[in-house]
Each structure stands twice: as structure tokens, then as C-alpha cells.
Amino acid sequence: MSQAPETGTGAEETVETRGDERIELLRADTNNDGRTDVWVVDTDGDGKADLFQFDTDGDGKVDVTMVDIDEDGQPDEVVDGDGGLPPEQLPPTVQV
Image (cartoon, rainbow, N blue to C red):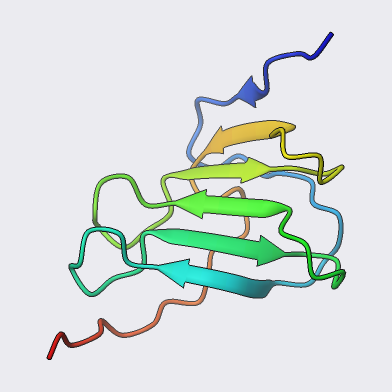
């Protein structure tokens, strides 16, 4: 029987990941404001995503972090904020 992922309440929570790397597999701008809203990250170099981060309010900062430590498609931990793993901020993109 699977358990619901842990959900935190503090903005300064940290999460455990499979590794110490931050290999961004995908960055997406889902609301077309020129800033990243979704980060999909591989932390152990195996090419599989195990860290997922979301900007839910459009301010360009991570609001929710999910970790899938065993890479089974089910989040093992969900916390508010960047989980201690903030992404590198890129300048906004320009729509042409």
C-alpha cells in the first residue's frame, strides 16, 4: 500500500535527493510570461528525472518541490519552496 507524500509547511525546508548534481533536463514557461515555471532535474546523472520544481504564482521562484527518490513515478516528498535546491535564475526570454 502506498503512502501519501509528506507535505511541508515551511518555506525553508530541504529535501533529500538521489545525488548532489543539478542536471536540468527541462525548463518550461507554461504561462508565456518569459520566466521558467517548471524545472525537471536529474540529481544523480542517470538521465532520469528525480526532482521536480514548480512556480505556481508566476514570480519566477520555486513554490513547490517534489522528489522521486526511487524514480518510480510517485513523489516521495513534497515541500513548500525550493527544497534547498534553488535553480539558477535565467534572464526573462523575449517573445518574437
